[in-house]
Image (cartoon, rainbow, N blue to C red; front, side):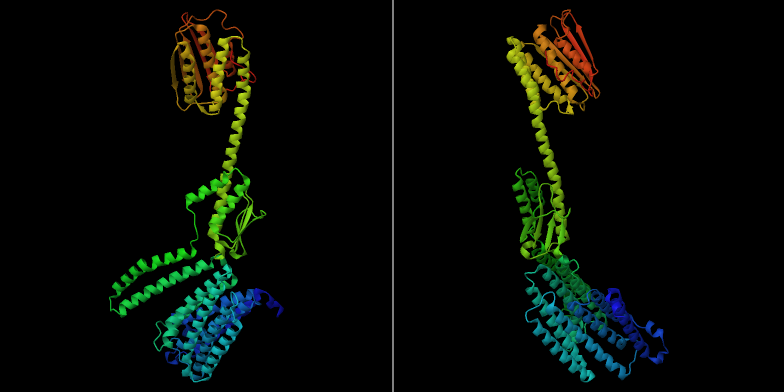
Length: 633
């Protein structure tokens, strides 16, 4: 049998049976004490009980089951055992009081007095156990053993003395529980200072403190403290019992260390909202009872004061506690791109680490092995792992904000965003570096293949006029190389603008007047091969006009469409001789270029001049080896 209790489910089942048995006892006592004059018996007596009766039952049952659940998971943990004992104490004093205030319930003295004593015992035991727990969790306070003995002996002896005395003396229990609450608050304050160097434990201490102060404090402030001062409770104590559920929910979260890195923030959220509600109620009551204000006017002024005074003060306090040093969005993006485009690898790694240092101010930042593809929070918020990205190694950050905080989900999201942005920035940097390398390669190749060959030809040319012409063409080619005039998708208008300027520059020393006309669709683009053919045609035609035509004027008409381009060049010179189109001449070269693109080429002798018309598709490709290696004549 005992071996079967070694599983959490078995332990929880036994404790649930205990709670169910206690529930049956309470229901039985309620039925037993039902006023017989109402002729009510059995379950009907339970149906007549009001909401206050069931609030106590649900509070006691909920507190016990929460504590039992945690104990079933960690039965050997002494802190959890104390928590389970406090849950039993809560169920004891709530269950014992439930029949006493039941509707129509009249208890004989032999039942009434023991119930009062059990209620008092449970209430005092709760305070003793909670005080002892807070003296040792999350850290052991100085002299905790002595203080534990003092709490157990002092409050325990006082409670036993009250239980052994007359039943009227049980009212002293409210004073005992009030003093126990003060001791609990003192222990919470002690935990806050004792955990100042331990962020995880401090987050738990703050959370437990807020949970206990809010949960138990509501009951003490509304019931126990007024009775201890000789006043009437502010609310029915059976309703006030429900506040203890806040204690057990908060304690369960703290003992299991569930999302411990968020506990500190959760605690202050709870504190701020509860404090705002209490402040609103307090101001409202003060205005009504002390100044005899109208209820509506007092509520309106209370809301106004809370909105104008409390909420701004709360925001300032919140920012001072939790809004760590933050970078503006533009600063963050600037820092990321500064890192990404840092040319030196060591400096890039250094600046990447400095960025995280600025954001999180960790006490320790070290390089690590890339063990995970995404940022991860470890050690309950003490450590943040940042994976390797781009050329930067993985990092481990410990103890953020100089050891005064923990990493949380929003910090994890920030780290993930940084890694994603850095990855994209690194891709952009690589594309930039690749583009720079390709551009350098292109310039080097073009200068070697074109400029070098043309300068060598000009160097060995015996004719001075020919030498000057080839040098001029070389300068034009050099301009094209610098402007990358053969890049894919080159707009026709851009290519024609460069050609017109070049043509005018070449005609100017000869005195030939240029008439240039271009028309077509502005969204037309040139592929590398048609772009090369277009420049070669115009340049070769201009060279022929300068060398052979003796013309006074020349016209260039270009019509470009999305699918093809037509170039027509005319002059008013002496026309063509019969053998001008022979093999090896510039005109033959022009003809071959156009045919290689599946275009048409036509030459007409007009008697007083020559007309050349070439039409070729803009998407055509150069036939292998025909144009690429061809030099201008």
